[in-house]
Image 1 (cartoon, rainbow, N blue to C red):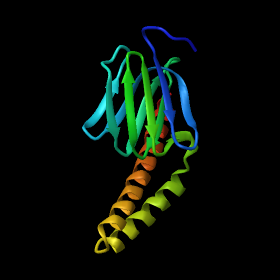
Image 2 (cartoon, one colour):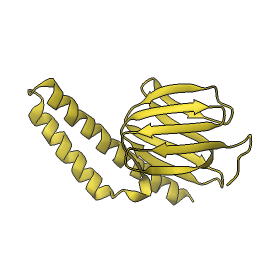
Image 3 (cartoon, rainbow, N blue to C red):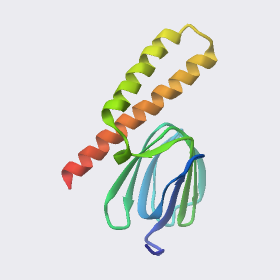
Image 4 (cartoon, rainbow, N blue to C red):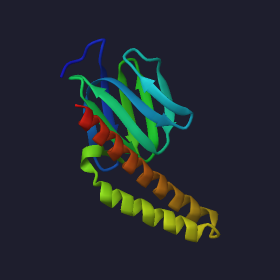
Length: 147
């Protein structure tokens, strides 16, 4: 692992752990303004992440897929730091468990639709997190079949 003008120093950090720290060629992330792809020498920016899938191309050419439930991205000249509420590598996730959790969250969302706004927002955020997990697993499995 080495730094060059063709790589980006990349880190994903949650309150619990450093999820990933290595040099990459590019990363695509879900922001509130839309999906963005960061390449080496990208203009600096800070943005809010929304729940979704992070795709990155590693230095060796392999693709990595992660789910993220929200947070922030900071882009510097050749460094990207993601401070995530939660982030998980797709290979760490279990599709059956993620789908079951998504179904439970969807059911609870329907039941709390007429509850207070705070409860509804919390369960909506949980549902978004579970949807991001299932999407990440699906993309990861698709990439692994192609390789």
